[in-house]
Image: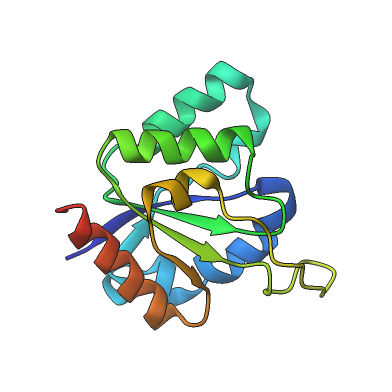
Length: 148
């Protein structure tokens, strides 16, 4: 069954890292990956606060899982927290995936960042990104845990 996934991440710092995951054929081809990306990564940086929240709310429509990509500075970001809160409110499966070790546009990796407290407080699983096969398994497990 195809999963409709919302990727939550700190745009300015982690877009290149996240795209290493999202732009691979296994992710962008629904039949191969078993999930589709519903992120708002380009549109969100062009809008004001209310418009961004509306984009997030609309982007979450039809999703079953939210993957929170955790970089060095993800925890405490206003929109990350909003995306997690709204994902929880709508009953999405939620999983945290550390991405700090992936290379940025300048070829460097970052230090381990704090995990958003909304994830740890609710007991959602946190993994360090390794392979697409693992990511798919984590997404499926999160969806099943949420009954989706």
